[in-house]
Length: 65
Picture 1: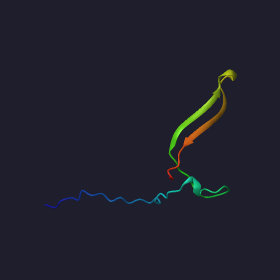
Picture 2: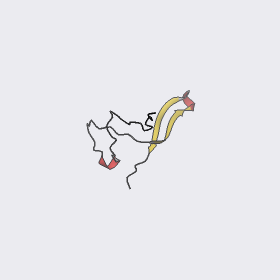
Picture 3: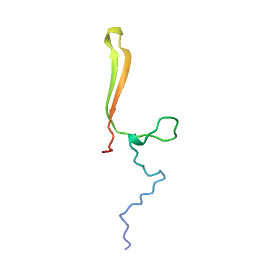
Picture 4: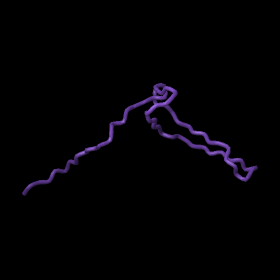
């Protein structure tokens, strides 16, 4: 009786993620993508003016030490 292999092949077509820190980013046009883990997201509304949108604030951290 032949036994089946229990291992799975992990074939992916995506590129491996490359670590990029905020210090590595230069201003201007670029074809790079910045991916980060969002820590917290705030959306601010003005309750005096029927909930008009005022702005938003994002908090994220850089892992570079």
